[in-house]
Length: 112
Image (cartoon, rainbow, N blue to C red; front, side, top):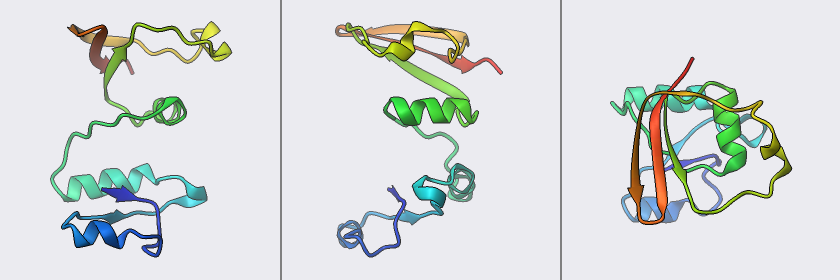
């Protein structure tokens, strides 16, 4: 579990349950992704599955922090006005698609 904290905000409950916490730098209240990547590499972790919301997703894509993308398509539409443009869209190569109930998963490598 990764936390952006100084250890004084109730995180001890994780340690009590045998869960390892990584306390990483968090300038301006945001996770330092370079420090996260370095820690993952040091621990022998070379792939991480994240389920971020729209704000973190956009930030990770904009900062080129994503190499491979799992994109789930749910049977619903967004009413977000920002979706009216393809300005922030990304293409995938070596795409694979599968169905999971009513959801559709499209995944592949992000085009650089």
